[in-house]
Amino acid sequence: MREDFGNPSSVHSYGQRAKGALDQARSEVASLIGADPTEVVFTSGGTESDNFAIRGAYDALAASGRRRIVTTGIEHEAVLNTVKALTLRGAEVITVPAGRDGLVDPAAVAEHVNSETALVSVMLANNEVGTIQPLAEIALLSKAHGAVLHTDAVQAAGKIPVSVRSLGIDLLSMSAHKFSGPKGVGAIWIRRGVRLVSQATGGRQERSRRGGTENVPGIVGMGVAATLAQQALSHADAVAALRDRLETSILGSVPGTAVNGARDHRVPNTTNISFDGIEAESLLIALDLEGVAVSTGSACSSGTLEPSHVLKAMGLPQAFARNSLRFSLGATTTAEEIEFVAGALPRLVTKLRRLGRTAEALR
Image (cartoon, rainbow, N blue to C red; front, side, top):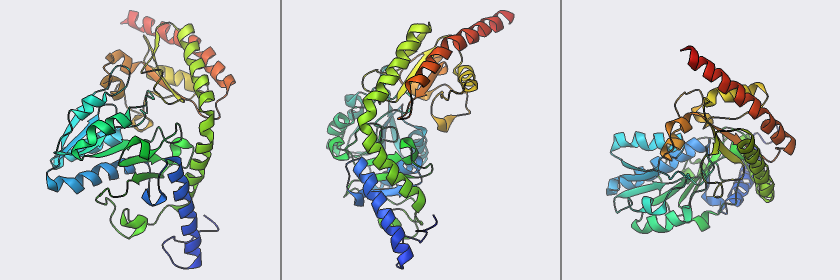
């Protein structure tokens, strides 16, 4: 911001130094997902990347008669609201549910893909329950009809090893702040040969795929974070062990609790736990007063009282969708912090359940 402040599109030395920093960051981000740097386009975050992938692919193929979009009910709102918006432009959207384990059946996706399908969009890792979808199998089954395959990998990149080549996909969305980079910057990987209609027209930045002067400081921060995240992948087992310790302690000390979603096929840093007889918002506030930050779902949906659409799409009872909390760990999470949370929860849950019974009796 202070030294290499030039516009990377300028030919003078200040601009070229900024361009060099941009190119280095592009290589660092590409390395995190096993991609070629020329296939990486920087955006303002995961939501823009999802919009670019979905709208861009649809716009490129709709004229040829491909107007079907196949997605799942557990996607992030950035995907669900975008495909919903495209129905106003003639898109036919097929939404496939997930099982109670939070996993999507590849065959259930593939049965809806035909010669009229423009796009299949299935996330790699779910943002609420952490389940990792069988994306490589979905790719094998669904691409026979020539549809473009997109994955929202915002919750996966930097948490688990990701290889765009091994997955067999065409488009991938990611966001820097999900692996400790700056907020407000992200990227989309576009496989060479895939045609997208640009959604931000203007100059020739990002190989004419996204107009507008790049956010160089944010992008450089994303590159550094990508490198650090790649190095930290070797510590994923340690993070998973702490998560498992938290789950075991909660399930053993707090009656009426359950882990939502599969406990094997998931990212190491996430657990989603339901607490019978409690409104999740109340427990969230109680934990916050203890200095513990948790969530009831996606941060992008915070402030709403609607039950989790992810848990509903998994076929769980509505009560589960209202009484579940997501606990997220990171590379800096310590065993002492896990013990603190595990020790506080029985006391807080007992208090809230007692207050709930009292309130019910007074009605």
